[in-house]
Image (tube, rainbow, N blue to C red; front, side, top):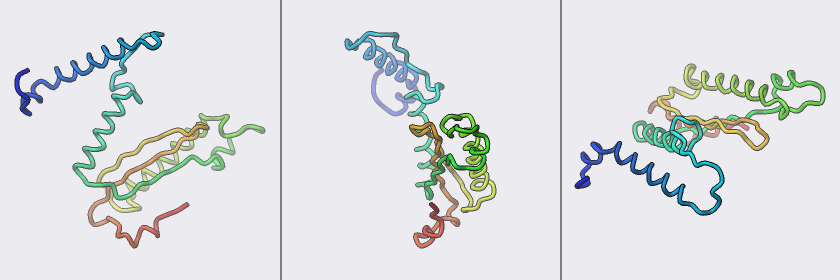
Amino acid sequence: MEGTSTSNIVNHSRTLRLSCIRQQARLLCNQKDGNIGRRIILPSSYTGSPRDMYNRYQDAMAIVRRYGKPDLFITITCNTNWLEITQELLPGQKAQDRPDVTTRVFRSKLEELKHDLFVRGVLGKVIAHVHVIEFQKRGLPHSHLLLILEESDKLLSDNYDSLVRI
């Protein structure tokens, strides 16, 4: 490829990506420390792979570029004492013993929260959002949500204390 103009890069982006992948594969295959197993480069369609995470990051940055910085950062954490979880446990069981129940209850509570935020607009009209679900060491899920509100619904610094809950 001659030149490095933007149009040249756009026209040859597929070739550039392929050469980047080939270079990564060569580097991985030439490692001398422990040639155990077979090296596989996961596609971006594989959830949690480095390429998937990179694509998700790029998507989030595109949202920020388009709509501006997030206004609210909300975290919801699974509580092992939620009635919906404790009712399903057998005598002697802990919530950690039933990841199916804790995950199902957490997901329903998260969907309810998202409905309140995005459909009912309890904190204002949300014009863009990003969220991620993670699992703690004991297997309990939690989620982080970043919300971008419509300009008329953005909070002033004096109003934040009225929203904070423990």
